[in-house]
Structures are given as C-alpha cells and as structure tokens.
Image (cartoon, rainbow, N blue to C red; front, side):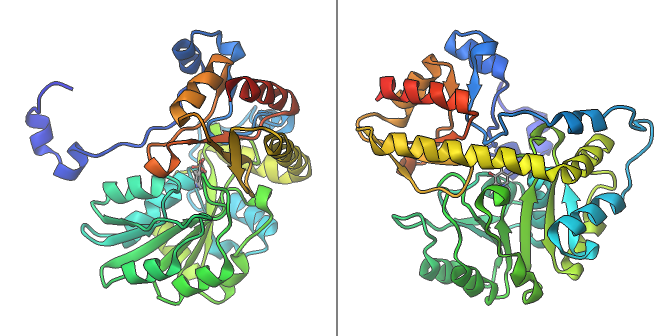
Amino acid sequence: MPPESRLEKLMRPHMAEIATYHGVDPSEELARSAGIKPEDVIRLNANENPYGPLDKISAALSGLPLHLYPDPNQRKLRSALSEYTGQPAERIIAGAGGDEIIDLLMRLFVERGQKVLDCEPTFGMYAFSARQADAVIASVPRNETWDIDIKAMLEAIDDSARIVFLASPNNPTGNLLTEEDARALLETGLVVCVDETYYEFSNSTLAPLLEEYENLVILRSFSKWAGIAGLRVGYALASARLISHLMDIKQPYNINIAGEAAVLAALRHQGELLERAAILIEQRQRLESVLDDTDGVSYYPSRGNFLLCRFERLTAEEAYVGLARHGIFVRKFPQTVLSNSLRISSGTPEQTDRLIDALRSVV
Ligand SMILES: Cc1ncc(COP(=O)(O)O)c(C=O)c1O
C-alpha cells in the first residue's frame, strides 16, 4: 500500500493496522501459483466437503423468491434446527457461517481493551475477531498432546476477561475438549464458546451442559458436513437469554434465501449427508494407516475431517510445495509450533489415492 493517507488518519487506529485473516484462495489461483490446470487442483486446505453439494440441495435452490427479504426471525430455520438438535428454537440463532456468530459474540460481550481467551494453536478467526474489537487476546499455549492447559487458562482470567473460545475438535489439532475442562471454565462465569463446527464428524458434543450453564455457547456449521460452505450458514445453541441478545444485535437479514433453503434441504436429507461424512472419516483413517507405515511423517489423532501431519525431515513449507506440485493443496500455519506440520483435509477415496502417492514421493 502507498504511504498512509488522510483515510488512515480518519480510521480507528487498530483497524487501519489490523493483521488480517487470510482465507483460502479459489482453485484458479492455486492452479496458477503451482503452474497446473485448475481441473487438476485437489483442495484439501479448508476442510470443505469434497463431494460438493447434494443434488437435492442444489434442486432446492431453484425457483426461490429472490425478490423478497428473508425472515429476520429465522422462523423456519430455527424450527428445523430445533428438530435436528433437540433444543428449543428460542435457544438457537443462525449466522452467516460460524464466523458471523463469533463476530456477534465479540460485539455483544467485548469492549476495547477487554480480554478474549483462546488456546493456540487454534482457529484463527477468534483472534482476528478479537483484534477487530480492539480486545486483548490471551492465547494460552496447548500442551504436547494439544490439550488445553487449564491451570494456565484459569490464571490468565482476570477482571477484564469476557469470553473463551475453544474448538472441539480443535482446528487444526483434531482433539476434543474434555467436559471437565469445559466445566472448570464455565464455573468462572465467563462466556465459554465451544466451537463444534466438526460435530458431525466427531459425534461428540457438550450440548447437554446447556441445561446447566447460561454462559455456554455451542457453535456449529453447515459448511463442512453439509457441503454448503459457499452459502455461509452456521448456528449457535445457548441459553434463551443469551440468544435473545444475539438476535437483537444481528443484521436483520443475515441468512439469505438460498442459505435458508439449502439448510432446510440439508436437514431433510441429513442421512445422505451423514453417509458422506462417514466416508470422509474412513478416508482419514485410511491415511492414518498409511502414515503408520511411512517413515518421515507422523500425525496427531483427530476427531475431525482433517489430520495434522508432522514431517520429520522436511519443513512444512517444503512439504507444502512438494504436494502442490502434485496438485494437492493443504493448509500450512505461521505458528512456530507448527513449522513442521500441515493440516490435510479428508478427500474422496480417489483424492486420497492421489494424496497417498504424492505424500510417499514427497517424504
Ligand atoms: C473451528 C472452526 N470454527 C468455525 C469455522 C467457520 O466455519 P463457517 O464460518 O464456514 O461456518 C471453521 C472453519 O474452518 C472452523 O474450523
């Protein structure tokens, strides 16, 4: 960017200099960077669903009343989500992806200079949203098994702390948050957001704790298991009181007509989607057993549709470039604890064949 202009002087200083969040590039860009054809790109870098949308979901998108605003109260959506989750509709809000819910929580609870906690390495959006709020981010390092360091977490909580974000399974490490650790944090009275974006792969949830804790938020998404990341729908489960405040501050039409129709169709056809999710888990397990017999690369146990792999003789960058030459794009991370690690999303069986061949040749 050219030197600071009058515009930056008018801006809120923390926004003018914010460290942005880098999302994944479109396949055409990935292909260009690797000097290959876009159709040869295998995207294993965003934990997307490689099967694409279900035909029945695509069909549900035609003939929609696109000239009308969607329902600001998300009535049909919340009622369908209520049936799916077993929670009353008043305890549910939908957002434009889990990302929007994270942003809304930050807007609702965090003022400038107040503290937001997460546990590194983890999903970068928590810290990014905290930076937007001009909050202080306490990123407490995870231990060598990637579990959270509950003692250090409790020590990091002071009067200015407002909210804790914990992904379960954690992205990118794949491990679950224990109920014991969740309870210890909930007992502090802070808002605890347990991010279960990968719930349909892990089959593990802390949602039953909603009966006990008004300060618990469970975050979920349709991006991964339901294959509609492009339509941006996620949701939160929380106490009716907390949800009612979130409903009051959200943009009125945050879920668009297409997103609403797609979610309703996804829930009608959840059986088929869950079958696909099961295949993706099988592919992760297949990759694990190949890695068990491969020198030079190991992995951390995962409950998600992704595997964090550690390279013994290569840096993450070297392994990344090697895989990209084979058309396979995975996720690398800036943190030094992950300087030898890459996160690889589960692909279709055919993509996993190609991944395994590529990994063998790269390591
Ligand atoms: C742990 C976690 N939470 C939330 C999200 C955001 O998902 P979305 O905004 O697509 O619902 C992601 C996406 O990668 C994630 O990994």
